[in-house]
Amino acid sequence: MIRTIYLWLLILCSLGAVAQQSAILETYVQEGLQNNLSLKQEGLEIQKVNEAIVQAKSLFYPKVSFNPTYSLAAGGRRLAFPVGDLLNPVYNTLNQLTQTNNFPQVENVNELLAPNHFHDTKLSFQYSIYNPEIQYNYLIQKTLLSAQEARKRVVENELRYTIETAYFQYLQSQEALQIFENAKKTLHELVRLNQKLVSNNVVTKDAVVGAEYELSKLEQQAIVAAKNSNVAKAYFNFLLNRELGSDIKTDSLLLASNQKQFIAPSPALSSLTSLASQNRQELKQLAQSILASQTAITLHEKAAKRPSVFIGGNTGFQGYGYKFSGQAYLVTQIGLQWDIFKGYERKSKIQQAKIQTELLKTKQSEVEKQIELQTTQAYFELQAAKESMKSLADGVRKAEQYFKVIDSRYRNGNVLLIEYVKAQSELLNAQLQESLAQFDILSKQATLNKITAVN
Image (cartoon, rainbow, N blue to C red):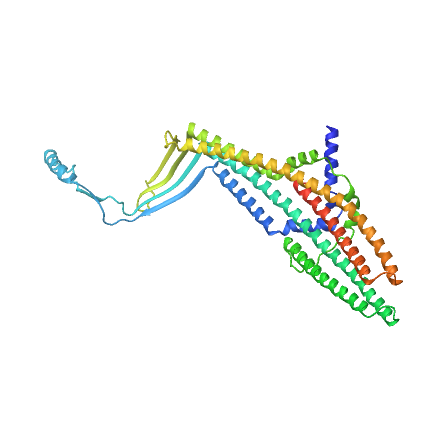
């Protein structure tokens, strides 16, 4: 167990070395994570799911509502019943027999069916004692929240990688400009040297023209490099949601602090694959989605087999006119709802949830294979970049030595201008290739960090 923990610590330290050694870059990454608009959208999505959980939880509580109504009616159907015509003759006879007026005359009934000046002022409540749909819907919403949080971490991981590689591209463009600037100084010196040689009748004037032509070609290349640097700067600021022309701090010690990383061996591929499978939030998002789908299956199965039980009631006043006196009433209820048959709807929903679960499991297996492939590709690309760096660094040293020899011989008149230009051009290309290779290693290391989800 201790050996396993030590191995994981070694892997984490190895993969995270580049980001940790650049405090400037890490500051920019944190700024991007705070300001990036895509990440803000993910945060709002999480807030929305949180509100869905609040809504699902609210169904566990009683529902209380105040519902006053007042009705005015005119016309329409009427209830006509000749109760007076039926009872009044009988009452008259009884009054005559008893010599009293104990039996009054009764009017015929002729009432509107729609009540006029009628109010129903009540307070209603309802509480669900048992409802599997409420219970499992709440569990589903909580699981979906975990899935949404995992998705946000996926976006964070991708954004971190994008910011790091954009920063490396900007630094590489700045270093390319410096390399071109040094090359221009060399050619300016060549032009001055040739002018002196022409004035001393050592070489002809075409040597000066040839050197100036090579300088103009180099200046054109420098203009393209400056354009690339401005584009890289604008893109980096875009990722941080800043003004596109904002200044960027350059970490001049980034390459120097990572020279050992360029030749250091990477952890074993099997360890990296295992780390990626453990850390990748895409798999955690899918796992939570599968759990939500399985909970949906349970929800429909429980709802199909068990009834929902609730209690409720109304209390208030009801009658003609707002008198309230003698109009109070109270009604309590206990109810049960059990869908015996709904045209196989429940069965279809259960089957649909099972299909969704199998779909997500298949997707999970596919993503696991993709992560394994991505890790393998990133691993070997990083290894190849490190091996290429060794030969390029050696090539730069040899190109520098070769140029020094050619420069010395040219000053002594033992080498033609074309050989000098060729040596200078080869040195320039070697330096540019080395610069590209150095930042390519940093970018490929960032790619491996992204795939293994190491921050």
